[in-house]
Length: 199
Image 1: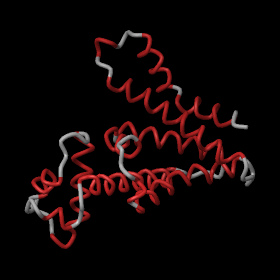
Image 2: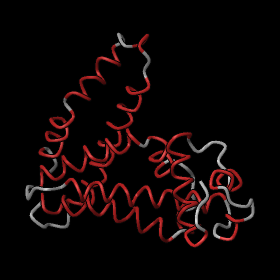
Image 3: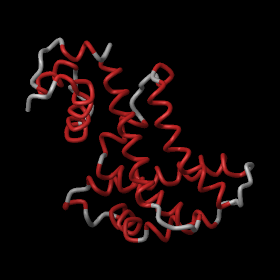
Image 4: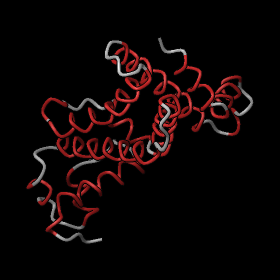
């Protein structure tokens, strides 16, 4: 598909996002994205100073999409229910976008050099922090620490379910598969219990 040059930067980001979502971060380059977008090999360099710059923009888009999904799915006025929805949405996003979530949290991008990436990540984290403040009746003290422990718990569950998702049929009888299946089947209950036990 040949993209309209007036939207070249955003189209290259979208193109890179789709490539990474399907293939992972390995072997991506500005030249590769130019080839997929059917533009000249030098065109991406007008908008991105390096591959890291492009990856930072893709990670930014990932955080924006995650925030959008969380906002879209929260429909209650109950802080506990909202936090369960946040957790489930985060996990579903991570399972459906494994390579993107890996880029967002694990790839060594120098985030301090990309303000838009920091801002989008902070916005996503702020959605969690805001609802934890509701859980604690607006008190500031407990929410920041609990936001870290909640994110660690939810991200840990995501990691387990990603491993479960990759297990082939020959390993379906293992104890890990049985345990991770239980996590998958009881996810909302596990999240609800964790949130209710936050001090």
